Image 1 (tube, helix red, strand yellow):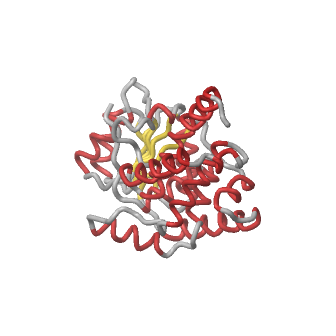
Image 2: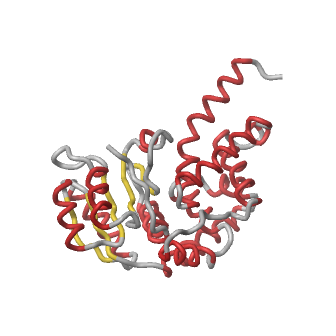
Image 3: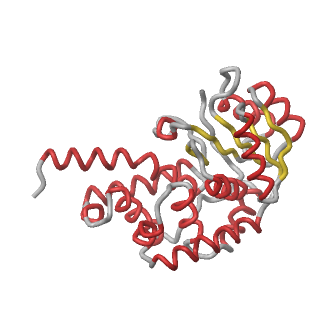
Length: 271
């Protein structure tokens, strides 16, 4: 039997992991609402039987393992498309090798090691390594486009530009403030925006993106960068589809850019 203290400790551990499970679910489905449905189903399953978490390498691994089981048994569906661009996106996704996107996100965005990923998807380590390689190749070959970078630190913006251009994308502009971002985005009409949250003049990257979406349309994919991702993943308001934690790694940016280019619609935060 478990004590009340054990229950509280377990609930606390699950609560600490939940924002990142929701981020993962959102990236897989391309929808905050649809992703949250799977996160809720996972929590319900854990509440009914938490042995999967207790037997896993960690509560975090157990929670993601339970999610993957539900996700896989449902056929890894996506939200029904309501625009031609979303239909094209899902057609591209349907051509990818099974479990490749899952491994890509688990490794590069959620930062699991290969042993943990193997446990989550019920595979061996060599298979997970191969799936990651396949994912990187398939995603890189699928979509390329124009990218607007909103970042006030010159070293970081130069690094992001190099990473993006090495993927075969072109950087249209680098903006340091909200006003610069709106002007550049309106003129250049990028296919994707890569935005820091806090900008040089204390303006908000979130505000800049929302301004751009008002001009260019809601189908513009966006990646936000922040040192505190859990603050933006509360479920209390619309959230970014793609969120990179600072300090980031090159492979995280590559993965997020590839994923974001697939998904056309991005619900964003309101400041």
